[in-house]
Image (cartoon, rainbow, N blue to C red):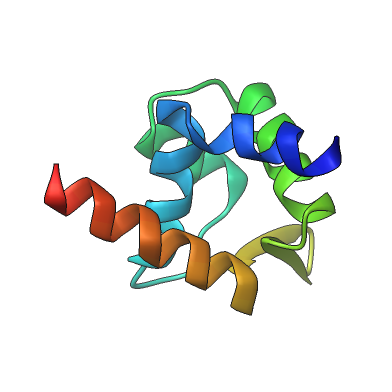
Length: 89
């Protein structure tokens, strides 16, 4: 059941865009700038990121008051597949 829930998250546009953006990042990414990049509300991005964290796809690294987002190894692999699929389509 848990796998089905996270599967449903990725086959929606915004979560997939979030993973691809994190995959292609060139500098630190925070939830607030990720929300701007994918044209989504901050609260919605945080909710999706929490699901991704529970599934072991993203990690939060505290830097002072800010939390920097990073993909885990599993997250990089998933984002890579989504990125390839996006370029094929």
